[in-house]
Length: 182
Image (tube, rainbow, N blue to C red; front, top):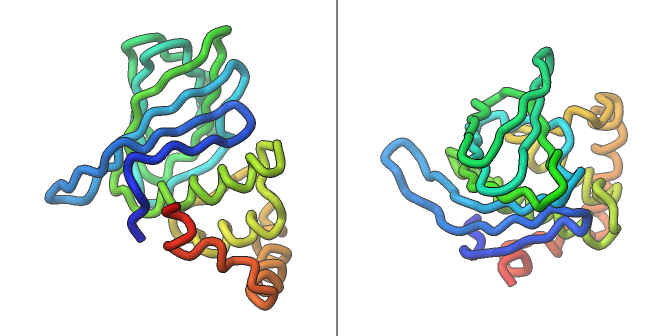
């Protein structure tokens, strides 16, 4: 599903992402986006199973970590790439807004996933989505993204049941292509 570009989404808890452009390259699409992260904010430990993700710092300090590695800091003008299947988390460790120029390749469902995630977290005013939304994201995108801070038992047993209930109740109709692009 192709969402509208440009598009700006707000997590409701200190992160704004502006999807700017999708570049069609011979070996797959690359989606370009900007991130605006408030001090102390950033995504929790997660992994893109099929995408590399790159970041360049334009303002502030991006602090990041991958499992088994020391905490790293990127200053203005510095960049990093998290290759596919490399778990990572990052946050703004400065006192000013962190501004990032970013990309993901292949584009896959990143824009759709983040749109649904940020819609849920902004409604809740929390950095975690609601139970039905988390179940939907986990089940629909289980082959592409994983949030490693969610216990395995939740993803294996609880989310499938909640997802099924959400389907029966028609809760996921709001995620159809037409409603996400508006």
